[in-house]
Amino acid sequence: MRRFTGSALAAVLVGLPLVSALPAAAQAPPASEWTLEALFRRNVGTRETQTTAFPPHKIVDNIWYVGTESLASFLVTTPQGHILINSSYEANVPVILSSVATLGFKVSDIKIVLGSHAHGDHMEGDAAVKLATNAQVMAMQEDVPALERMKPGGKPHPIDRILKDGDTVTLGGTTLTARLTPGHTRGNTTWTMKATENGRTLDVVIIGSVGVNPGFVLVNNKDNPTIADEYRRAFAVLRSLPCDVPLASHPAMYNMSEKFKRHGSSPNPYIDPAGYIRELDTVEKVFNDTIAAQQKAAVK
Ligand SMILES: [Zn+2]
Image 1: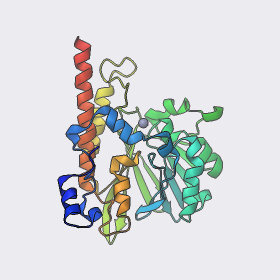
Image 2 (image 1 turned 90 degrees about the vertical axis):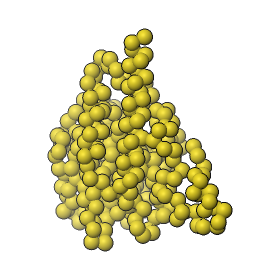
Image 3 (image 1 turned 60 degrees about the vertical axis):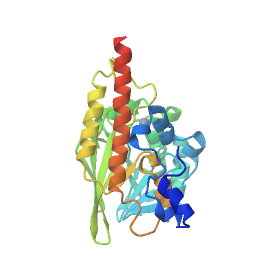
């Protein structure tokens, strides 16, 4: 990964403050340079970053970060209780609930648990959070079979409400909309909501995932023959969404660590519509490269 862009280096040479001189993703290579493996490593991090709490913080309005260094969890607070998005690995649940408490919120006020998609690093902890809070767990219909196979310690996966594309979840005056963005999993869910800051209404998009993991079969996939079309549908949906504040299931997808350095400054660093488009361009480029490589291998 590049350490300095030309402009950042120039900022050092003329003694300008480096952080304010850097745009949000200045250290990231352009979309055209990413490979599947590099993007996957960027997102999932290491065992250590997956399990180490990132400083919990306010993102915007009533949306807070309570996840680890490489696995995102969000708390949406309301006067009638809170919504947790992404319980993460079961082993991370104490870390997440501790971050909720550090922010001054009561764990027992978590009333609803939502998730990005049926992979263990985002939703394995649903049963443990429900045990700790008695919250309602809600999941996208197309992800239910995969979630039912996710049983840490033999515990059945709790699902109290099955969601369909476009369904809304409302608590204490806040409404989230579930958008089916499949491909990465059949029921991959992107959550959208509104936030308000300084009298301005902002569109928040919490991307499920449109990443292609190593080993994913996009061409001639017998288990899911329509997987490539599902990904294409997800890209089309994501590109249709208005987005001021991009968030995602892995914090690297919205460059959280760079933005957090400017935490609390004005304008709010998490407002980054250009970063949203750049991320979609990056992931879609890797998807198209992967399809092309697999098609080439298939005709040999
Ligand atoms: Zn995943």
